[in-house]
Image 1 (cartoon, rainbow, N blue to C red):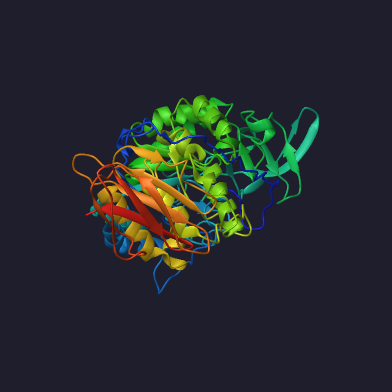
Image 2 (cartoon, helix red, strand yellow):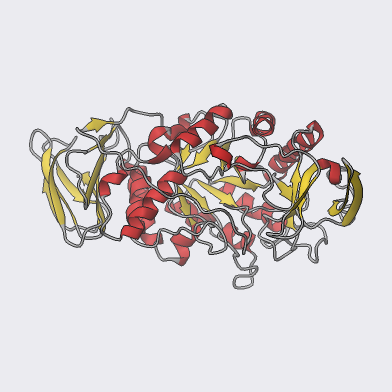
Length: 496
């Protein structure tokens, strides 16, 4: 999770995957496009989000800050087909210019005040951030900010107090002397928190009851890190709503990524969404490897927020670990994306799964098959990881898939459960009156595979738009044809 700082530990996640076997071919019901998401009306049709950072991005890249790097790529993002960029936490952290932002110190300091040893955050100054947002907006790209509301770190002073007969001396006083009450006069003291971490992985001081929702047999818990904000008190709720609206106005935000969702009081988040989000987009990090638990959270939040499809990530992780021996039928009707595509953000990897100090579970093998899967899917809002696109050299292939998504990924979807096997997976989009549709085929095996499939494309000639398989194929009057795919590869067959 984003809130796991480098070197932090957590309880191990159960990664057991349930593979659904279907006895016959069945269609998935038509669902609204991303434009009709009940959690937002701000996402683009067939849009694709870019996670615009990774753990410990450099403070300087060829003399530029990260805000300058992202702003400078606005045209490139637009050309590739990205319709939104998720920015990292933009505020001053406890480690100043070194902090990734998740160790949040002052939520009103976006790189403007000399606090914690620097004016700039790890990513740059306020002016550079606003220029970055303007550059992205100028290319029609929406901007989502990472909202860290669970905790504070790096207090200005210790406080001594007695609670229920116990004496405490803890770092809980946040007065922000360098900011001098600009933007907000609110200061934080021990009574604004439920407890505080003594030191990383070294136990807790607690003086108020933890306020969290009892999801997933105790996997949701309040005491995550730093000074845990007490959202059972309306004063903190009101201040955080005020801050959310200030952030939205200051940066012109189109949406939000909510950090550590399962660790905060759900009623507070519902209030925050109602008073800040409006019709903007929101996706929350609720790290449950369980579709039913994610559905329970969606119910508790009244559908106010989308969720990252954690179970689908672990499905891809299992495919990766199998590295050719995994049963590809496990991709059928997979994850929250299939169960509730309206509220699902599908992803392959992110900064935490890629970070050895966090929830390290990278999809190391066959990753491009996973991207083909989420980008061709009828359901879900796909998110591409910056490091996959740029650092790991998958950008050209992902860009090609995004182009196919924009041009052809329309219409009803179909799972070929009687065709799929241990190596071969097929999935089609029927197209609509103005888009031709597609046939996606994936193969994790060691040899080229081909299957006879009755497709939606009758008497058609099709080409693999990825370029991975050369030549054309034809279908008969019923739509039947043989759809090949190379070993350990992916093809997207599109009618000419």
